[in-house]
Every structure is written in C-alpha cells, then in structure tokens.
View 1 (cartoon, rainbow, N blue to C red):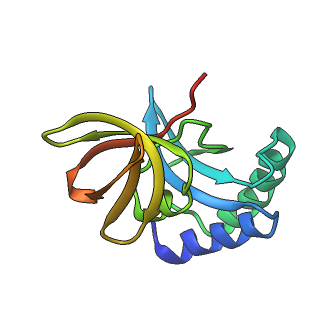
View 2: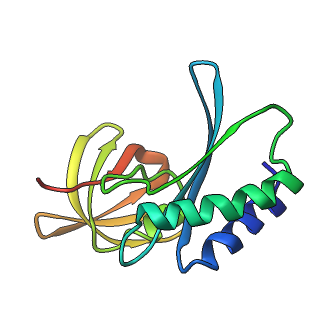
Length: 144
C-alpha cells in the first residue's frame, strides 16, 4: 500500500479522535480484506468503527488501495494485540507483554520503554533490554 494512502487513512482516523494502529491486507477464504485497526484511549466502540468505516469508504472509492476487489473492516486490534512494529511497542508502554525470545523462550513482563532498536521489559523487578531481532513473537497480555 502506498504511503500516501496510509497517511491519509491515519488522518481520517485521527479526525475521529482515534489513532491508526495498523493496516493489514489478508485473504480469508476467497475474500481479500483491508483491515484497518484503530485504538483510542477511552476505548473503541462499534459506532466509532462504523463512522470511520463510512468516511474511509468514501476516500477509498476515489483512491483505491489495491487493484482487486476487497472488503473494508475497521476494528480494534483487541486487548491482546500483536506487536510487530516499533511504534506498536511505543504505544504500549506500561502494559503487560508476552514475548517469545530467541534462545530464551517465553517471558511475561511490563514494557518500560521502546525505541527504533528494541525494548526494555521489567520481568519480576529486573529490567531486561531486548533487541527487536531477538523477538520471535510479541503481544500485549491481559491476565484474566
């Protein structure tokens, strides 16, 4: 997806007081889905998703993000969301995270900081610095 379209989607989402979390294009069965995930400090509601979806549909009708037919979905990434990009980590500070680290296995801790190179996680009172290249899988973690 072109950066101009991504930036415009982020601006539209921002005009509703939310932030763009991620955009992914997935295929489920034979459908192509353009999934726009949003976050908002006070939570994401169904009405907010519907409002943003209507506005994005108007924009994407004029500026198609891809050549083939697709279905637009606007949603929250969920309480336990994947962390795959530095800005995902930066937007999840002070949240519990579950990580699969190369050569160490799974760890759970509180995300203390994140920059373009890696993160610092508090694991049972001990701060550990981890480079992104060491992380095989990461997500926010909610203890039920």
